[in-house]
Amino acid sequence: MADITNKKAMLLQNLQDAGLDDEHIKCCMSMAEEYSDVKMLPTLLQYRTVLLDTIHEKQDKLECLDYLIFQLQSKKQTI
Image (cartoon, rainbow, N blue to C red; front, side):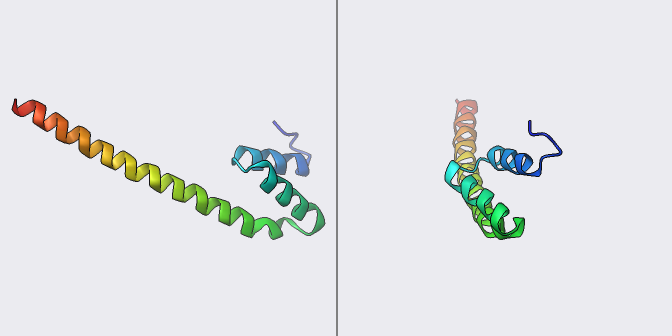
């Protein structure tokens, strides 16, 4: 865990924990050092959208699987 007093280490740890790849982490760290933390906001929002899309894809697959399980269980009870 990053030292709480070290803002740079905390940012790095947070980006890693969020699952950003090395290229995006390097880009965000560079923006934070050269400009300001706010400059990395579009990159983080874009990554958030990617994660949310992945969640929705998995949710759709889970709903299909749940429906199939329901159908098979209903069929089993009628036999």
